[in-house]
Length: 387
Image (cartoon, rainbow, N blue to C red):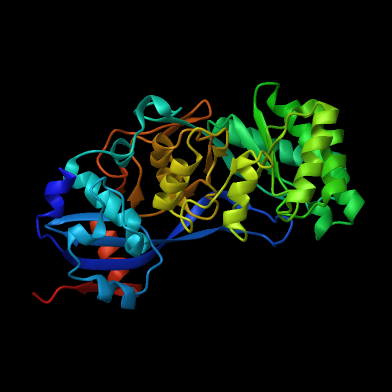
């Protein structure tokens, strides 16, 4: 049906935008670089109208960009395979949602590579709790800090999570270096003790370690069986090669994850293909859905995994579920739980560490029309065709 749509003559009739304010399910502390993240989280949404059907999704476009795109024909927006053309990546999420509704199919079904993907259809996708930051800095005693953070882990367990990413790097800014590293180590061990042997534990240093600190932390936590370490230090193939060789000698099987910052995107893909990085984490929003599809094409047949970065945007939780079916080695979703008034996700559920995805049209999300229209009128914008 995609080719016939391309000949339909349908055009973008209206584009509306506003920011909805959401709230995280718990207060979020510091990471190695930044201060407290808090609970408030904005979500920028854009809704498009084409041929009487709407589609909505995350977008950061300006009103000026939207005005230039009013009247654009569908044939200029999509390829025959249903992928959004690069010129319109700025509205790829509302466009894909629209396409799914027009075809009465979930987005994941449009790009499902069948037996090649590892999440099934409908997707049941592994995820992890991404909201465990430095919530312990108010405590001077390390033992009390470990207990406090264990409580945070168990909150995530009660919410259905079975995989947990711990922010580390307290000694980079918020604590003296070696004392902060010691607390990092004790908290990692404390998570394993609290969660038992089967939970997955990952750590994220936000580039705050160097090579030797990384080795010290991984060596001290060898019995924890860490799944991956994310951004241990700023991207450097020489240091990654050294770390890989050291882990091999130590018998450690910790994967290296990187790519969220995109500072060296072309190089980092090459490093991954050469075995220096195990997991690529390009961002689900700012790198984007269709670029992840293209990266998936490039990585097909390799052993490189993808686990898109998602922190800071609730829409990415759901978008990641749909891109998973198109990627040969999709690993896991970075789940950032945020409740947004006016936006509902019926059918999405985290059960025993995996997201069950509804077989609903588009991205399967419901937008309260009255709430959205009021928000557009109060602090957003709307542009439409004059014809």
